[in-house]
Length: 58
Image 1 (tube, one colour):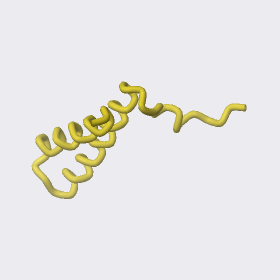
Image 2: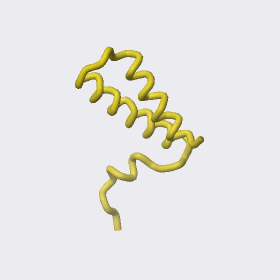
Image 3: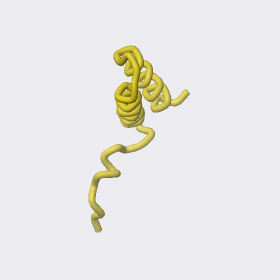
Image 4: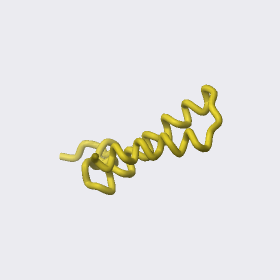
């Protein structure tokens, strides 16, 4: 299992544990899952999160 996938699952499980449900809970679970995915992917070197936000440099 890749670290980014593990981070995604961990973020989703933490969000579900903290939030009791409802639409706001669903949105928070998606956001926390995305953050977990990005952090784990960055730490494992699978991808560079900041590369997406950098401007094009020639």
